[in-house]
Amino acid sequence: MFIQKAWRTASFGLYGFTQFTKSGFLEHAKKFREEDMQIRLDGKNCLVTGANSGIGFATAEGLASHGAIVYMLCRNKERGEAALNQIRSKTGNENVHLEICDLSSINEVKSFATKFASMDKPLHVLVNNAGLLEHKRETTAEGLELNFAVNVAATYTLTELVMPLLGKAAPDARVITVASGGMYTEPLNKDLQVSSSRFRPSEQGKYARNKRIQVALTEWWAEKYNNKGVGFYSMHPGWADTPGVAKSLLGFSEKLSGNLRSNDEGADTVLWLALQPKEKLSPGAFYFDQAVAPKHLKFAGTMSSHSQIKSIVDSIRSICGLPALG
Image 1 (cartoon, one colour):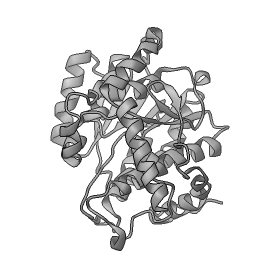
Image 2 (cartoon, rainbow, N blue to C red; image 1 turned 90 degrees about the vertical axis):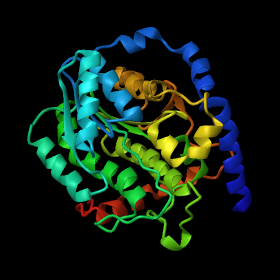
Image 3 (cartoon, rainbow, N blue to C red; image 1 turned 180 degrees about the vertical axis):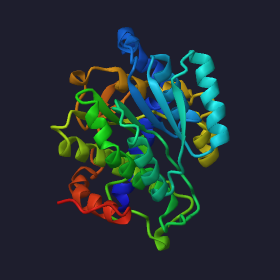
Image 4 (cartoon, rainbow, N blue to C red; image 1 turned 30 degrees about the vertical axis):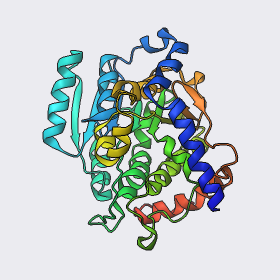
């Protein structure tokens, strides 16, 4: 077990330093097709979580620049309004709107979903971008470990509750979940909230575990809703110079200063996935730099763990107070 974990970490590090940095993006971009990014989204409704900064902001701005009607879901009203005004000013698109919701509260997520659904509009693109890497163990008012609440519980609950709106946009609807290459270091694990006795502030394992769940959930959704006309995709933005990275991974950020991707480069594949005809995309796939990427590193021993996803989904639904699946 120790040897395998060490192998995962070493393999991830080597893979990351050669592929996930700015230099990796610039190399991969040589193969990008310019026409892929010229597709318009006029009149299409897009919802982006965590849209006031970082990759979420770059995604919202990119969608707006392509003519989409963008709903920015943010926790902080003041920051959200500043981001909203900036995007409207820069893109000239006035069809950009701010929604407020604290994704660490599942009750707030449910309330938002009910309110949003009442507009009865088709939802063409949902971008699950909001993420958190908190080193110290914190518990929300609803009793959930904070990282899990934002990264997993909110992502799952919001996606499930807006499925009727996504269905209205079929067959063009899609859900894009911003995961992380960090998931390569962790298999799927039923210890969803990382019990306090095993919580190590210096480890990013809890975040990587959350991201592994997101990738497995994307597979599960793609299979469950394969006849609903909704596409499900996860992606890795690479190592980008976001406010979240600067705050949570200061040493890492300083070490790679100058070779981290910009927010726009990190958001590039999110936007690409939103623009492409669905027949060009692979349901349930994990994307990186506009191409399907492996979900598991060689000899990492993580592939078989995905067989646990049904049990994990049942646990998430129970934790979030959602009805059990039949």
